[in-house]
Image (cartoon, rainbow, N blue to C red):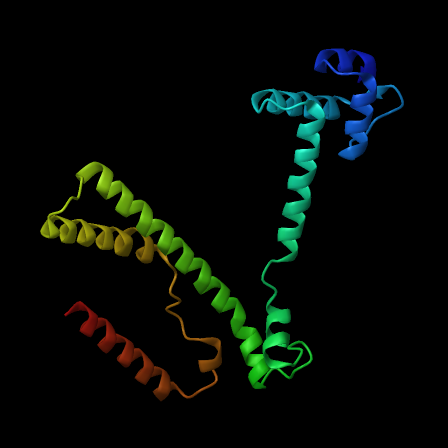
Length: 198
């Protein structure tokens, strides 16, 4: 714990400014003493303010604006229940599990996973393309560009898609079906894999 006057002197501001900033940012203050954690936060804020050529009060207001904007962004996160309700006019948690809306609601998690996978693939591709450009200097030569693209695709196939768990086991909904259909599915998967190799 440090007395507010000592901290104000260290921060080169008045004790009243320290009190105002603590109140603005909801930082704990005990009458005339400041806890160590709050002290370190204010010292870090002062360092950031100096770096940006701002006063301590301006930096505190800027930090508060950033907090508020990040809370607003948190409210805008994708909500699968609200999406289905808005799109189809039915609350998916009230719909029966075997109805179209109920099944669709159950599948939204897979859609979210696919969206995340797609995002990672885009990041990986752009990163690899940039790396290839920097180190190999792909230029105007189209043949050189095609070779670079082939190397990128190969790395994505081996390093990224090779590590994804594609779920080789049977789908839970297929477990209740008869075994001939499962055999048929497995044989068609083998045909697909063979045709992809060609």
